[in-house]
Length: 356
Ligand code: PEP
Ligand code: MN
Image 1 (tube, rainbow, N blue to C red):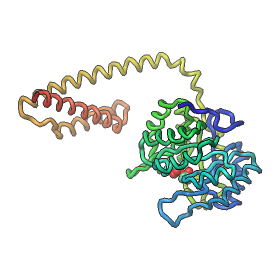
Image 2: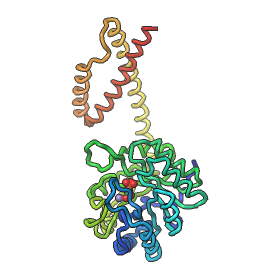
Image 3: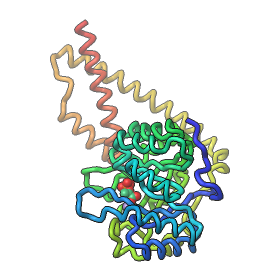
Image 4: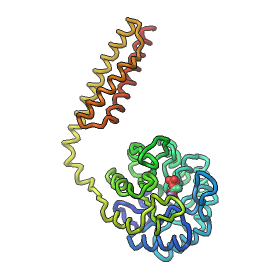
C-alpha cells in the first residue's frame, strides 16, 4: 500500500501531530470555549464526537447533526481543522456535507467489517483523510483489514489511532496498550502515520503525560488527546480529559528524541545485540536437544511427557533468578513458558516418530 503522508495541508510534520478536543460535542458553548482555548495553545486539529457509541442505551449518545454546525463555527472562528467519528453511511454523508476535514472510525466500528465496508463505500471518490482506531479486541489482522477496506475505496490519506484494547483483566489501564501490536503495524507499513490516544488507553488524566511520552519514544507520529474546558463536568469520559492549559504544558514538556542522529552511534551496540541473539538461539537449540533426549528417556521408561511438579519448580526458581538479575519475573515467566511449550512439542515429536 502506498499512503499519502500529508494528511492535511499546512500542518508541518514536526512530531507530534496534535489532535485535541472534547470526547463529545455537548453544547455550542462548551465546543466553542474549548476550541478557542486549544487554538491559543497552538493546536491545529480539533476533535469532537458528534455521534457517541455507548455500551448501553440511555447514556449521552451525542448531539448529532446540530453539533456539526458547531464544528463549522470552530473552523470559521479559529482556523483549526475539525475531525469527528463516523460509524455509518449516514454519519459519513452528513460529515462530508458539513465540510468536516478529517474522519475517524471508532474502535467498536473498526471491529465490524460490515460497518467499515459501509463507510468505505460511502467514501469512494472523496478526498478526505481518515484515521482508523484499533478494533477493541487485540486483533492486528482485523485492524489491517479495516485499513485495506478504506485503501481499496481510494482513500490514500490514511492514519491509524492506537487506543488500547479491551481486557477483562484488572489492569492500571482502561484499555491495555499491547504496544507490540502497533509496533508490528509500523514494521509492516512504515509510511502509515500512527497516532496514540493516551486518553482512552489510560482512562485517567494522570496517565496521559507518561503515555504520550512513551508513544513519542516509540517514534509514533502524533497524539490525540481529549480535552474539555471543564473536564469534571464532561458528559462522557470525564476522568480522561484535561484542560487546554494542561495540554499546553504537556506540549511544552514532551521530549522528542532525534532518531536519525543516534542511529549511527548505535551501530556498535546493534552488532552486540545481533551477536547475543545468535548466542541465545544457539543456547536454545542446545536446550531443545537435551529436551529431546529427555523425551527419548521418558518414552523408553513409559513416563508421561508433562510433569507439572517439575515445571512449577522450574518456573519459580528461574523467575527468582531473573529478578536477581534485574529482569522482571513476569518477563522471565513469559520466556520460560514459551521455551517449555516448544520443549513439550519437541518431546511429542520424539514420541510420534517412535510410532512410525
Ligand atoms: C472517542 O474517541 O471518544 C471514542 C469513542 O473512542 P474509542 O472508539 O477509541 O472508544
Ligand atoms: Mn472518549
